[in-house]
Length: 174
Image (cartoon, rainbow, N blue to C red):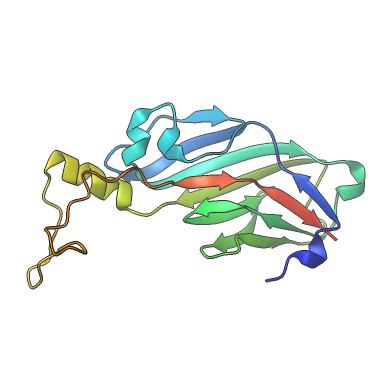
C-alpha cells in the first residue's frame, strides 16, 4: 500500500498515551501513562519484560479545523506485532503486517478524537521467563527442540523482545 499520495500533510499524534495490560501470561503488569512510545518491556512495572499478551493503548488528541472530517491514513509506525484499531468508537480494522497503515474514512476525524489500539505481541518474552524459571513448557513428543548449534533450546539468556506500539503514530493527509 503506497502512502506517498497521502504525504502532503503529516500530523504527528502526540500526547499522553494510557497503556493498560488486558490479558496475557505469565503476569499482567500494572497500567501506566507515557508521552514517549517505546517497548512495553521498558515499562515502569519490570514484570512487563516477560509479558506476552494484549495491551490497550489510548490517546486523546485534537485536530485543527481544516483537518476535521478529512480522509486520511493512520500510520502506526513500528508495531510489535499486531493491533486492532478504533477511532472515535468506530472500528478501523486490524493490522498484522508491514506497513502498519489503515485508511481513515471521510467524516471520522473530529476536533477532539480518541484513538484506541489493542496490541498483541509474540510469546518470546513469556518463553524467556519460563526457561529462566526452569518451568517445563515444551509439549513436543516426537521431536527434540535444539538451537542452530544442535544444543538444547534455551531462551533464558535472551534479551527482552521489543513489544507493543513503538510508533511514531501519524495521520497522513492528501
